[in-house]
Image 1 (cartoon, helix red, strand yellow):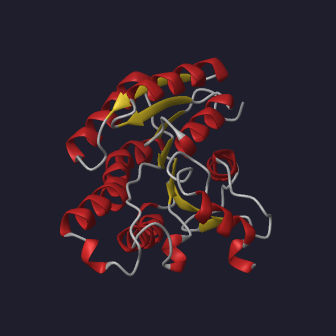
Image 2 (image 1 turned 90 degrees about the vertical axis):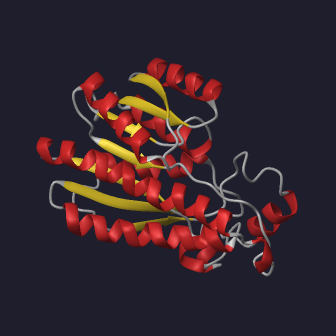
Image 3 (image 1 turned 30 degrees about the vertical axis):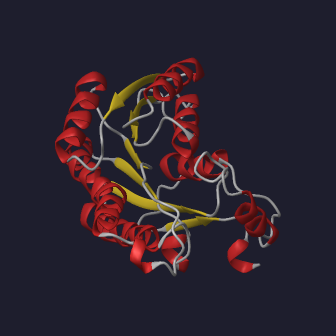
Length: 248
């Protein structure tokens, strides 16, 4: 177990990619704080499953757009486990809006997407940085998106926020090295509850993907696991996991 005795915080950890990451890390022996904002039942289930997998799972409610709550979560983690070794910024928000429908892109929508996807990730990094620096090591993985590289995705603000997250990854890797490594994973279309209601779009993307299937949460969790456990000389990078759609 590569992460025995270590501790990770996974934001948006109750379902989908976040849940898969929690379970991958727990199978390596990590104690996992499963962050959620609304999905309490799912978060508690993921925490139980993480404990059964070999770590210790604990659910913690916090809206990552609220910096005070993020600080509270990090303090709870540090007090409970004595350390914070990894932060996975997976919590995200979007709405499906046609990119041509500019009038639907309200200030409220822009603000909420950026508050969760960009500022929320930064709040987490800023809160864990002193702890990781004092330990002499730590790992941050931001879950961005291929939308941040292509400009596509569910909405224009979402794509812009994910591009900002990729830039944040580069900035933070330079600012926090060498003690803390900061990387991001950019998934293509992953089949989760966010995407299951769009079968025609899903099929179109599947047909244009070299691997001829949509991604799964485990596809992304495997990349996160690599960056935390094995990527000792990798920082400031964005790993695209899209089944080859970008080259098809």
